[in-house]
Image (cartoon, rainbow, N blue to C red):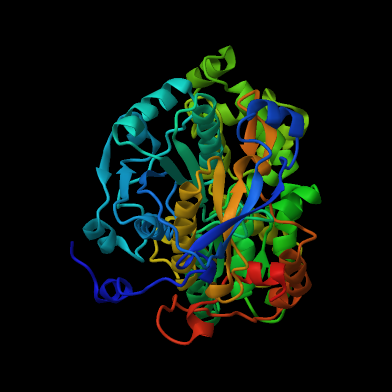
Length: 551
């Protein structure tokens, strides 16, 4: 494996961990828990893993001999910086418990468990991947563990390898599936524990016990570096508005964090748009107003941040998409008729077959976006919202509005656009020191939960705005985070997504500052992630977490 000079140096980095998990450890059980909502339904579905106590680890004086552990690990879903360090932490943790312990990685995500594809992760393999980005050590996948036949196939290989436990490293859906798997194995007394680790760059897997999902810190630092570079270019050339779409379909945490780091002129927060029931036209008018006022000061340039999932938070767009999904559902008579129409007639036909309100919105869209809504559909016939080029939609609509205003003598500036989408650039970056430390600690903590015989828990590391030695390591029952939601027409137990809280400290601070940032050029240029140097430069956590904890 060829490695860069940076990777060679990063391999020597020893992640900082809570002092409570170094050396001898004792487990402290707290109060029993209940789900965040729908307690009766969740308890009925998870009778064996519901109501478990919170767990905290503390340093112990006595050392006790503990048996060797055989553990399997799965990477599930999209990549996030730090996954390799979670695995390194598990490996070192179980070896610390007993040097005879073994770690097996299932290849290609959950499908590796079902199809019995795995490798043993040895020290030689682990050492190649310490403090590196990506999930390439064993690969990831999006197969969902939902059916008993899958659980039974997984149990076959777990028995063959004499596994004590499986660790599922994933987001909210993956950890929901991990909890279902834990419940099933507990119900049949399979003897296999299941532990989860909180992963997603989107930042929407968090609560009072999970301060942040891993990868969020690194990804937002990567995006903020790029945004800062673009802001400096904009401030140098002074001739373009840069519309930047950022990952975050279900929540706007990435956009908010990047705004706090870089202070752009415009940042749209999907949750605020939904709360205010803003129309698409109102969003466009808000952006245009800032552009006009900046132009009046001679500033025909700026930067706008746009969350990937914004469209689904605009009530009228949500209604339009729902109507299009119903109209063009796979196999319907309307879908067949639509496919036989000439392309030049399709948009007018759509407008005639949806509600008057939705038709008005549909006709206001740029032709390319309207066509995209009717053609880019998933196998079920639904609009693929993630493929909508929201940044171009807004840019073209703002341009049209400014041209109208120019004709009326209400705008005399210039408006040129550049479009960007930052997504994959951040998912496999080499983890920041914070993510390297946090992820390693999550993995090491997971090994402690396994050693204590726990199942249905997620590894938890808190107090992370303090020095790492003071972090609090433990476990939270996954059922504690669950509620019932409608998925594909059926009510299902799922981990509740954490949206941007409009009454929370991070958003309130942003809202208090965005007026200044809009009309003045107060850009911040964060630069690249720093791995070596002063603590205040290399180890800071996110602005979001600092504001949430007021530190």
